[in-house]
Image 1 (tube, rainbow, N blue to C red):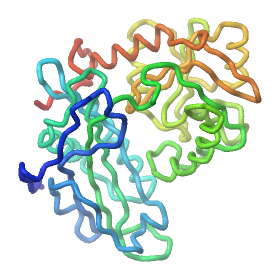
Image 2 (cartoon, rainbow, N blue to C red; image 1 turned 45 degrees about the horizontal axis):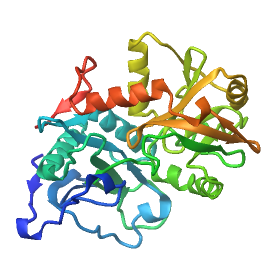
Image 3 (cartoon, helix red, strand yellow; image 1 turned 45 degrees about the vertical axis):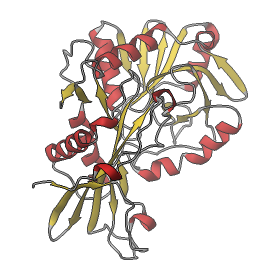
Length: 357
């Protein structure tokens, strides 16, 4: 399919942010967006790169009633020499199709997914920040648009991509966050949709996140739904624990999102010769390690924040400090190494970086 391009006239384009230190996250969007529609009797059609604009939906659109909605999170980066890069975009395309299959939605041609993202980034390339640490956030999403009530897999979908310049995801920036262990609420359960990037997963997490925020904590550390003792994820990210000389992260098993950054952290640390283990980890093992001093670092990983150190964990009425509440050397090294890869500042032996301009 050929993408139809309708550019916004120069005189009608938005004013771009001038202070990249105040970008924040998810507040500003560019002039263009990509859209493409699907119908079960027609397949995907009408791929258009056009003006950023509101969506028009029938009040009975199935995404509004039955939650058929999935999305991805990606970034584009501007190198020091002006080159523009994506980071492992094929992995996002693959994961979106995994989510689509689980939610009975139309799958996308993965190479076309990447091409649509590339073209949108390039048409709005002037919006890509020039400051290291800032980037152009990319949000591909798919919603069910069939106008019909009654629970059944939809026959019509809209795939769209929007982009916008972003700074740090957390207000703390690259500084230790405080996380709250939820004992009363869970993010996902075996047999559910925990390994999909589906909007409903995030909606269900908001109440616990609100409670954590009221107590002064940035994010929620989720435990498993069956025994309520095994660590799964933290907020919108995967979680890692450095206990002694062992780097531990919970294994993928259907309840945890297979993060692209998680995989990058695993491959990087293994290439450094570290003892890296994917295994179930009991929250009591974490608190005991924090108490006896063997818990050296805790950090989260994800596209939005890259690597986010954890300084304090609250569990059962007690707050545990990790590394005296300071950023640890491993989290800092990973953060800098991944950024250098993303911005074209270091060799890329893994083939993760995709230069598009």
